[in-house]
Image (cartoon, rainbow, N blue to C red; front, side, top):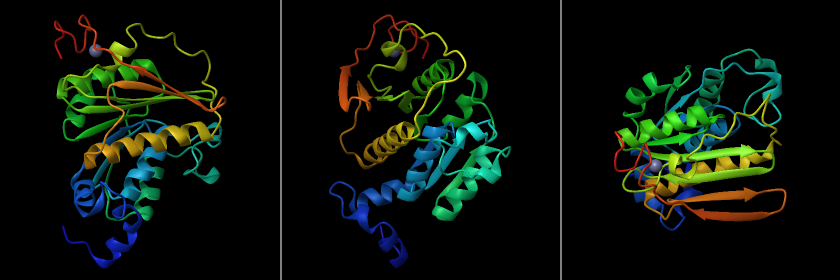
Length: 248
Ligand SMILES: [Zn+2]
């Protein structure tokens, strides 16, 4: 792939990374990624993916910007409170990298609208803030055979998993029982979704470039204690989503 001199300069630091180079950059340019959620995780994921030169970038969120978002959602501005996050994010990303084709969806992704949209993307990034939405995404991704890059944060803890329908375990294998919903709101120190969102974006870039990924394990980052734990995920034979009797 030939790059313009401006592209060579823009991407020079990542073109020099072993495993990316011109081939990887071409793959990033041809890639399509859907980010579900435009909050603390999703806005960071979308920003790093646009900056990296992802050719087609979708992002979905029904929400309006609230004052309480701003301790962690650092691409938004105080004066924009009350405006739709996806519109604000699209404006920011367009300025960051005009070459990335942006597709904002101002809607809550549910079982009906998720399937037709995600089929048109190669990879899906889970930046939802509740398990109901995560499980819907998991089911839709396994049905459509799309890799799901899961991320979640709770206080100073974050978790990351790459869930691959080509034989790998799914999110329901990792969490067979739905954890109880959080009462009120989830406590989140601002930097924690920043760290996890950046890691999700790094997984996307690695997957597209064919580099080793976190596939098949749940990585838990204890940012308060400075420790990382890895849990090898096993496919459950009776999993309703990816097991033998599943309809996925
Ligand atoms: Zn499963």
